[in-house]
Image (cartoon, rainbow, N blue to C red; front, side):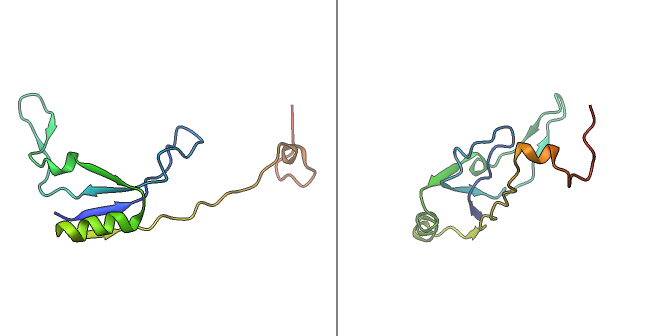
Length: 101
């Protein structure tokens, strides 16, 4: 029952960064998922897989794991690369692909 501590990535469908400030603790699956033969649904008997805990800081999440005796793995967030772009760059002379109408 290993826990993963990480910062969730931003939602790909929106440009905002809501719900990405807190650290999240998820448990790794202890047993594989099985396919139910009659309906074909995927199921698992592992209930810890449904549990998600949120913490304000990484230290709080690590302290919780150490206090409860849970082995954990911390995944550091990757720095976001922002490319500055202006609308005027669409019409720049140095543009590789020429502008056509």
